[in-house]
Image (tube, rainbow, N blue to C red; front, side):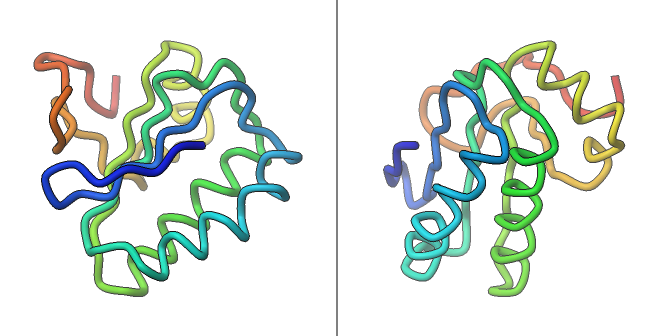
Length: 115
């Protein structure tokens, strides 16, 4: 995972497999970053190659943590596989999934939830 701030938005960019191991390893690091983050957070999954229940658990924790601090979380699923996992679990209805991520480097016209 990489953290950067772009135009006042904290971007958490994940890559590789987002699974139970990643959830266990990344939760303390993500929590520490979110303690110091602003109120605008993006979870960027465009480079995630595998997403399962453990990865979804991490994303839900991030969403809950950001919401508890009165912040906004945007989720950028990226691949069709990630979209499918979000749709099957109906989490596409829970997360804010923008057509264009709210940070530099967004791709206009990207798919949004409920597809």
